[in-house]
Image 1 (cartoon, rainbow, N blue to C red):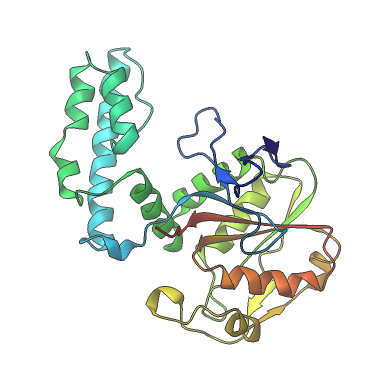
Image 2: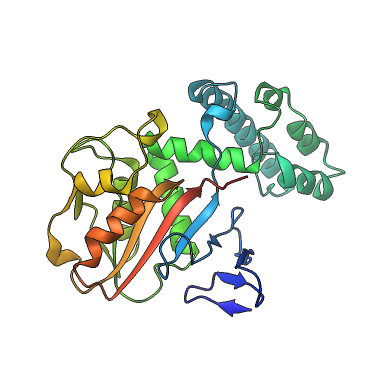
Length: 282
C-alpha cells in the first residue's frame, strides 16, 4: 500500500496497475479517488471525485431532471423540519439511490416518515437507472450552469479531500471552448481561493484565444487543437509555483494535456490535476 502526498490511497501489487480505493472522510458522501498515474500524464497525477455519466444516456433532458430534483429537495427540507420538531434527528443523505437507499432503509426501519420519503413517487419520475453516480453528474451540469450553491459545495469537497493542503498553491483551470467565457470552473477557482488563504487564484492565467467546438457537441478531442487555441497570460502567477489545474470532466484528457504542456514551460515547482467527474471506459 502506498500513500500519495494528499492522503488519497493507491492500492497495487507488483503485477497490476493501481486500482481505485476509497479513504473515509467524515460527513463526505462522495469520496475522492485517484487515477492510475501512468495515464495519461505520467508522472503527473489526475485526481477525481467520482465517475461521470454523460447526460445523453438518460431519456430526460437536464431541465426535466432539474425540476424533479428541486421538488425532491423541498420534500427533503419539509421532512427535516418534521424530524427536528419531533427531536428525531436528521437523515444523512437526501437522494435515496443505490447504496444510499440501502443505508437509509437499514438505519431507519422504524421511522415511517423516512421510509415514506424513500418511497416517495417523486423518485419514480427519474430514469430507472438514475444512480449515485448519476446525481453526481447532474451536479456537474449544475456547476456548468454556474449554480452558486453547487459551486460552493464542490469547493468544500476539494478542500475536504486535502489536495490543496498547507503549502501555497495556485489554482487554475482548463479554459472553456468559448473565448472570454466565464465558466462554472472559473467560479470554482474563485471560491476555493477565497476559502483558503494559501490558495492563489490563477483562473485567468490560461485563456482561450480561438473558439473551438466543445467535445460534448461533437468537437474533436485533440491535444493539438487545444494547444493551438490556448495561451498563457500573467505567467508570473504560475512561474515556479505549485500548481493545481482543475476541470469539470475529463474523458480523453486532451484539454488537460494541452494545459499541462502550456504550463510546463514555466518550470512549476509541482503540477497536479483535479477533475470533478471522470468518464471511465466500460
